[in-house]
Image (tube, rainbow, N blue to C red; front, side, top):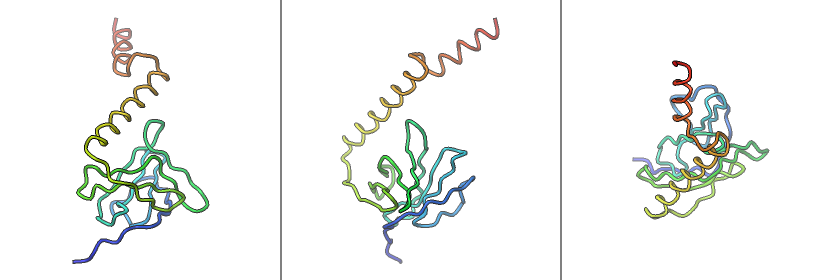
Length: 138
């Protein structure tokens, strides 16, 4: 049995569709589908998918390599790895407690809600769609 090899660096590979088999050390980015994917930096082989957008992750291309922001926390994977990819380098972050994970997820939800409330008003997407359908079928 081979020992997992940690990935120390990532290179950016723009793609239209994500490949079925991912290579270690490659951050695949599909702008058309607003998503990025890579193999976990710890070497466990888990596929990590990150949605891209104003309330999710962002990818920045730099001369040294890609930056994926914010950090990747693989809380649902057995390895529970936590790291950042900054200018191609993997920067390991501390593992979070269960309470920190819950608080982090709540913070993400609050940021999404705030973003969309500012963009579309206080009514949520489904309420607006329901009102539109009612208006169209009167």
